[in-house]
Length: 199
Length: 199
Image 1: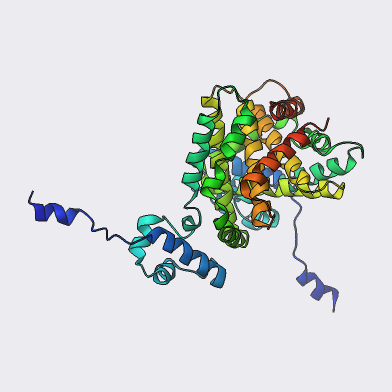
Image 2 (image 1 turned 90 degrees about the vertical axis):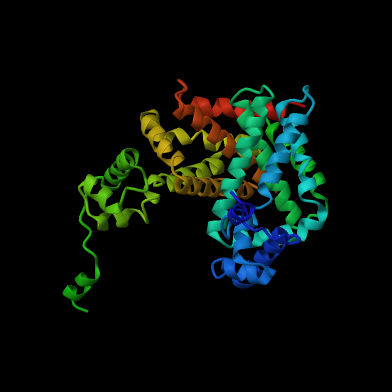
């Protein structure tokens, strides 16, 4: 096959500086301005100064553009579980994994996270997608615990407890609690332990 | 307005012995046989020996027919929270509420519950609906705890912990654990307390 023939088989991917981030920001703006249902992929691409084709190189659909961070978050949580000291109990290992979350969600992302959550909360379709992402995250943590040798049902219970702590701490963070996310995660975990010790 | 005129305004609802239960069983059979996507409301009504109109008097759509028990379950959980002794801590009150679940899901419903879960697990659309129902149940329990005077974030954490216990115990029950659901709920709650005390 000639070089020219091979070239026609390879899609030309033009490099767009931070195309992914521009699409995410454009989508968030439009969902907040017009609502999710009234926003199209074409509109998002236009706002970002990119093409629809570029959009679909990065995201499967207009829901996914809001959940681009999920795989990274999940990967880091699972890595955090694996990196916890072997002596750590299941919930302590989950706590170590949760402590990695602020790397993905640093303080400067708080306002954007709150804006994103408002869009999700306003749209049943997005709430469903969020619940599915959360269930996948919880399942991945349970799997990570089983890989540490934790049996069932302990692995599932510890993973679910961790997911609850994450949800509560994240809600406080985007709700305007002055503490940073790492502090809120640690505080919520301690509170969960207190709740479970109520006799 | 004459009696005749009024009569024309009132839909004639023919009484069908256990129409709701027959529709639920017919739907479950067809989802298991043909899959959810290939099953129509017309098909469910036909299998149940009823009309489509009767189906829509009982259920909003073909997803809802699998979740007909949710409002009763939620109502009983909230009533169980309210009925727990005032001295009970948040998680103990949640435990008292969970102990009412076997009234809704007695032993004779185990096989049907397992069959229903297999259908849900096979269909992303149904898994999403299930997650939404569960999130609503958890929110209702948190609200019930706040009505007992429990503050936040304790109410949310205790409700989430209770939801985790329910999910795990239910999974063991339909997974064939020999113990009854009440025993599994109590055991899973004790295990969650153990997980949270791991230091």
